[in-house]
Length: 402
Image (cartoon, helix red, strand yellow):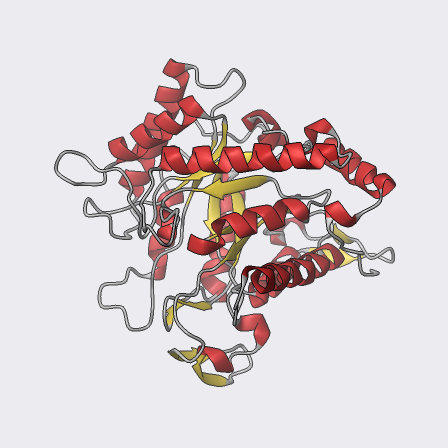
């Protein structure tokens, strides 16, 4: 299949912009919805009077935010009362049940409640003392109340100063198969470019390429990913310097001792050697261009979104909107997860989820106003309804099981 020409939306001709807008309308993804990342491995998530993070405090945060802004999606993690990462069926089930009941009572949305997106990622660095095993990743999707969407990281990646997230092929395949069986949409996470290669390989299982370059299903029982797939690009995950010690062996058996020694495709989607804002933006643009070119050449119908951690939050949001394609971005995500509570690096001020969501919504509106002056259709960046996002992600009819 010939490579797709990828350019910034803002640099395209009026005719090209119109074509992208029409493609998004046909896909049911004309606008961009807001996703609340309500809790994570760090950040000022809400706690109860005893300082504990509970399903009730998570749901309370969700409802406060949903009352202030139309949420398309909510992403959450199961946690211990102290807030540590610990995948648990009971925690996930209670969040899903309470959110659904509260949304119904409060009538937060005339069409549908936000899509519920649970994490299946367990922190399993090779040097972790109390890490959960790979089987724990099945816990959030194993209850009788099912999420609409669940995260699925398709391969290993280095992160957090030299530790590793381990996702062996057998675990990824089993998770994908279980999500397919239960009607849960996988959110395929891309922390490094090699993860995108893993997704492509996963998508092609049960399919064969036709003469026109498209991939058709020939063995339905072997297919693991239903169309349209949804990819989430994650920027800014690496916390260590390029020379941070790491024990990493790639799929070819090559061993690396430092993050800086890794091939480019294995490095997290982090902009390196940034000296000023212009350099940061240019390098971020180069990342988006390379990722989207590869994605649209291999999987032209895939949906995509992107979010940034910490200092990457606003730059990635802006870049995602500037690189708008017919297939994405679908949602913009923000919240206290993974350090996103830091609003001003100089003040080190921790914001609540509601404050972060307000900040994100204001940024989207400001960008929309700017783009309209450039001749872009009014609805291009309109905040999308949960029902339309559900349709865009191919999850209509697969909302939380009663």
